[in-house]
Image (cartoon, rainbow, N blue to C red):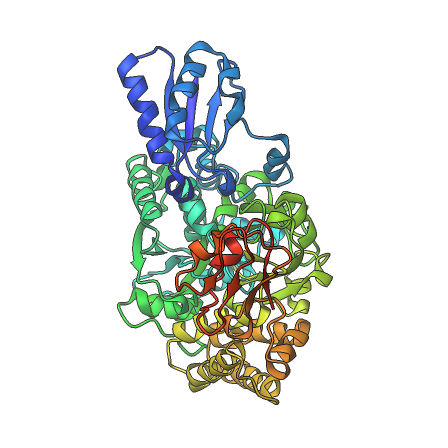
Length: 589
C-alpha cells in the first residue's frame, strides 16, 4: 500500500502537515512491511483539502478528502489490513470526482500525481524526455520554435502574445561580443485570487525547469532566471531542490545530455510589487532597481536584462512546452479555438461551491467552468458575475455566461484572459464595492512613474469611496468614464492601461447599481454599510436572544421570548445579528 498526502500550500494550510505527522508516527511505531508514505502537490481540489490518496496493492487509487489528524489511525488500519471500508466515510463523492474528470490537463498534468521533491518520480513520468529528444536527435533551434508555432502557444500570463514570435525575436537578436542572452520566468503572480503558477512550482517544479531549458536552447541563452514572489516560500524551497537535483543529474550545467548546450538556472525572490508582473519592470527589479516599466522599444528581445537579448514567459507557458515537444505542436493545436489553442488553467475562487485549480481546453464556456466543474454558487445563491483577469480584467455578468474562453471573445466582453484568476460573485456582492476593491489595489500598486496612472487611479478611487459611503453625486459616472479613458490612453505600461477595466465593465453591465448608489443612496446588494440598516421583524422574532448576545455594541434590546428591537443610533451594521438569527427575523434594507 502507498499513502500519498497532498502537501501544496492549500493542503498544508488545511492541516495536511499534522495528518502526515500522525501517519508517520504510526508507521515508525509499528514498522509495517509494504506501507509507503509520500507527498504530492495540490491536485487542484483545494475545496477538499487535506487530501490523502491511498493506492492499494493493485495500484488502484482511493481518494480520501477533508482528512484530519484524528483520522490517521483509520487510514493506517485500512492500509495495513487492505480493508478500505474502514475509511469509506472519508471517500470522495462521485459529484466531487467530476471536478477533475471534466478537465483536460497539460500544464497541470503531474500536479497532485508526482512527488515534487523527487526527480526520480518526474523521470518516471516522462520527465526530461523532451530536452533529451531535442539534444540527442539533432533538432535545431528553428525545429523547436516551429513546433511551438504549430501549437499556437500564446503567453499564459496576460496579453496572450505569441510565444514562438518572442522566441524567434530573442534568437535572432544580436547578443554582442560575449554572446550572452537570458531566459527569464515571470513567477511574480500578483493578481488577487490567482494561484496557478504557485501550484505548478509547488507540485511539478521540474516541468518548469524543462520548459525553460527548451526555451533557453531555442534562443541561445546560457542562463535562466526564475523571478518568483517571496510570498511563495514553499514554491521557492521545492524549486531550489529541483534545480539542485537537475544539476546533479546533468540536466542543468555544462554539456547537457552530452551536447554542446550548457545552461544554468537561478532564483530571484521578488519583493511582491504587482507592477513587476510587467516584463520591463521585472527586469528593472532583477537588476536591483525599483520595479518601474521601461519605455518600449527597445523590447526585451533586443535589450532586456543588463541590456542583453532576453525572453520572458510565465510559469504556465513554460509548463506546456515539454508536452508540446513530446506530443507535437499539432496535438496541442487540436485543442481550443482557431485563435486560442491548447488549454488554460484558471483559479476558481470567491462564492464558488468547488474552489481550486481548473484546466480546460480553450473554447470551453464560462458556464461549463463555473457550474459544470465548479459546482455553481455556494449556498445555492444566484450567480451574478465573474471577475476575469484580476485587477486588470473586468466583471462578466450572468448574461454573458455562455462566452467561450478565448482571448478575443473575452476581450469583447471588456475583460481579459489575464493569468487566469476567476473570482465568482453572487447576488450578495455589491459591484460598486467590488470595482472599488480592485481599483484600490491598482492605485496602491502603481509605481508612480506615469501621472495618468499615479493620479488618475487615485481620483477614481476617491469617487468610488464616496459612492459606497452614500455621498455620490450626479455626474460621477461620467467623471469615472472620462478618467478611465484618459488613464488607458496615457499610461505607460499594462498596469495603468488596464486598471480602469473593472470600473468600465461595472458601468457597462451594472450601471443600475451605480445609479442606485448615487441617486437613491441605496446599495441593492445590501453590502455597503453606510447605505443599509438592520431591523428585526417582530412577527418573526421568537425572542431567543441570540442576536443580542452577538451584538458587540449592545444595540439590541428585548426580553427573552419577546420580540427584540435594534437601536439604529447605536448599531454599527456589523451584521452579527443577521448571522446569529436562525429564524430569518433580522432584515436588511
